[in-house]
Length: 179
Image (cartoon, one colour):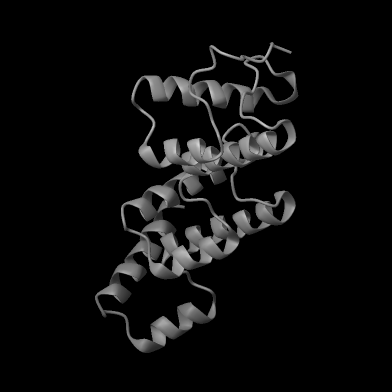
């Protein structure tokens, strides 16, 4: 209903400039009038994220998940707002309390690094076979770290973390057989 939508928009504008009297504001508020549609939209998506977290144990909604594409896009928007400093501290706190990961790429690197540490604890080295079937993602990640290092694209902090656990950059000697 275009007329109703225009009227609602006008009421919001009038309140914003102080042109609605208190009785009108109170009357509309009592019937549940939404004064800030953007705030309501944010709260609805936040509630969806809470439900998703309860069901899945994390807030990393994949765009591949058909039912969650809109939620994944909303989360991406929140991450951009956070990184650019355009998010209120209240929203930041609420999302962090829920467990949002602001930098998914860094989190993925940290997860793979923890998996590398576990591999080292189990096998005594960091020489994950290139075609290791037990964890193909870790095998690919290890290869990617070596490639990034050769190209000079791996930052010093990550190099340091890997070297601290005994990661070898060149495996020409003593390469483990592919399994």
